[in-house]
Length: 326
Image 1 (tube, rainbow, N blue to C red):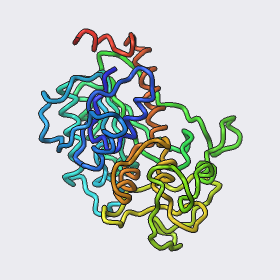
Image 2 (image 1 turned 120 degrees about the vertical axis):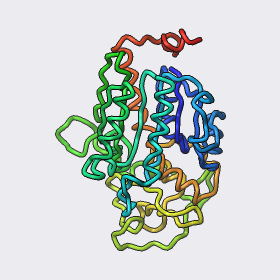
Image 3 (image 1 turned 30 degrees about the vertical axis):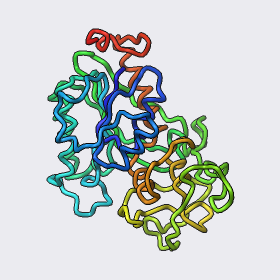
Image 4 (image 1 turned 90 degrees about the vertical axis):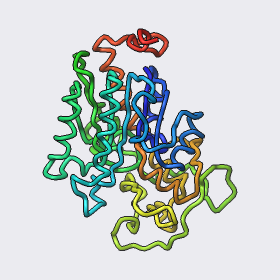
């Protein structure tokens, strides 16, 4: 299944699909040089640096799946001045343009939880309606990363669409972990447990990106200044701040320093060998903007199951429709 990714960022959503049998990444795009360089370093290339609005649909390869974590700053609850007419909110229309042109079997979009109640839910209803009018059966759901073994309480809305003629039914993945003790599932993974194997960044080590912000710790309850409980998943990692050292970074569960880039990436479920090919502040920002790869993999697995159940067959990882095109 050929996958095209828009607003790819560092590639968290893409990594989930790469790690799922039956999908192959063929083309990606972002307008952030740090994101594109990091993506290409880890995926062996394939990510184009450009504003998506300047790329003609004819320049984008045909695809079976289109991914799009369209920028969320306009939707985020962290943006107190958010409005439905924020220019950044209209970027989903670029994803819609590509989907209408390529007619993929399915698409997956991800955004912040705040999108679901912005303008009393009208913004999300409008987005879903646009995708439905393009010929897709659309379902959305808020997923908590902690429910899938990620050591972070991170709620994000996923929007999945399957082309109507497939008559496919998508079911969101069931949680693999729980905060309740009577479910039979493993308990949520704590941030202390997740970071325990990592060496002290102030001692000799061989990990990449294992440096941390020296910004002074404060404990006032506000974002970036909260005590971290090592026995619970971390609070949501954010990308608030700027690229000049002002990115908000969570405390390490020791509450004696900030998390390193490598530690924050681990809390997002990135593998240890994933290299952030940029400066420290940019790396923090890329991690905060990323989709947790472990959640992305759960969604990718569920999507593959839905397509298989609908009769879309796999042969050496290539769909029937892709074979016909070739």
